[in-house]
Every structure is written in structure tokens, then in C-alpha cells.
Length: 311
Image (cartoon, rainbow, N blue to C red; front, top):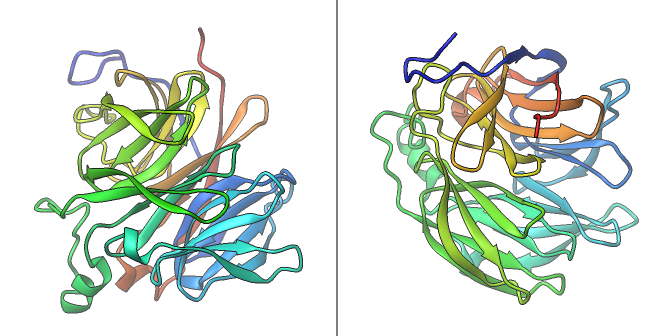
């Protein structure tokens, strides 16, 4: 079987729902304890999920709306507080404190995040007042709508001591971020329809900006993928959530797709549990529009087992 572009169709696994009743889950991340953690935007909570039973428990309450998650080398959780543009740190006793104030370095809401092994947090932002726009027009779709063309935004690095530095500008809605073994930082540009790469220097600067994968025809039917959350898939491959088609695609450098996961509804974030074969974790919801998902619990966690890529 081939796609309309003439390329061989990637094998597709169908996900099953393991947890539902959420509002809008994001940033599925494996913690130091092996549990799965997700942010539920409109429940204002970080959840800890046991991957053996899929039972969820509240782990942190974030009134400013949680998004990206990651861990410092000492095991303390970092979580983006979107609306007040802060990076919070969960202490051993469960209290949340401000790790860094992102207000001066971001525009609109703060968003997704990746924390590397050195404890440096890489945080994207919206670049515009998404929530203010929706207050004026609740049915607007400023990211995935046919006329979506928001301003560009920045990527911010937060060092372990809380120092905040702008490291990249002009990104078309920087979203999911991950680091490859060779030191390449890959950032999903949602509105740009691509994955952009940087080389990370020893002092944490980003150089060599380049296109890592053009996703303009990478969808199951040869249509574009507007990448949201991403996760390292091993080697030079990245799992990319695909809200448009509903699912996730495993993308190699250059844009080739060698595996897909089909979900029951749009997929806005993806993670990987280190099982054999790997368990791909998809965060899905009926829509990303807060008017709908804040009022209704359409959010689900869906999973599929996908063998590692050959070679």
C-alpha cells in the first residue's frame, strides 16, 4: 500500500484507551520512579499515573495551568505554570516554589518544556495572547484553523540555578522539544509544520539552526502534520503527535515516517514508556479549544505497543 505521494504506507498500530475522564492532558513524561506524569490543563493538576494499573493520583495543584514537565538531577519535578508564566519546582514535601519567573522572556502563555540531564529547562511560549483572543471569539482556532497565522515566538533556557536566557527567536509556535543522543535539540514548530534542530553548545547556547524534518506532506494521506508534542523514539527518530489526523507518527531525520499510531480522537501530546516493545502514550481530546475541553472531560490517555525501528 502506498500514500498519495507514492511512498510506502507506514505500518499503523491502533491505540486503546487506558484512562479517560480528563479535561486536556499534556506532556506525558516518565518520572525517576518509573511512573507516568501528565499535566491536565483545565483540572489545574499534575497527575501521577501507575503504568501497571493506569490509576491516576493528584501530584501537584497548579492554579496557573500546568503544561511542560521535567525533572532536575536530584529528582525534583519542574512544571510550567502557563498563565502566570512561571516555572515551578516541587519540593520533597510536596510544596511548589518558583524556580524561575519567565514573564520577561515570554509572550502570551508559557508552554511545553524539555529538561535535559544537566537540569536545564527548554521552554517554548505562545508568542501571542491565545486565551485573550478566545475570550473575544470562543470558537476561534488560532493554531489549527485554516487561517491560523500567529506571530512567531521564542525558546527560553532556564539553568538549574533559575537563570533565564532567550536562546532562539522567530519560531512558529514552538511546542514539544526533545534532545537526541548526539546533542541535537529538536523543536516542533506547530504552525510551521516542521521539526527544527539546533546544536547545543557546552555552555547551553543553540547554534546551527536547521530543518530537521519537513512535515508538510508527512500525514497518513500525504497531508501536513502540524506537530504538537514530541518525544524521543530512539536513535535519530522522534514521535510526533498529529492533532489533525488523530494519532502519532514516528519520524526520522529528513521526514520519513516509519510507524504510526491511530487514536480515537485528536492527539496533542505523545510520550514513550521504556517497555519492550515500547509503549507509545498519546494524550487525546475532542479538541484543543478551551471553551469545550474546560467544560467537558473528553481527555483520554491512549496507548499502543510499537516495535523499535530496524537499523
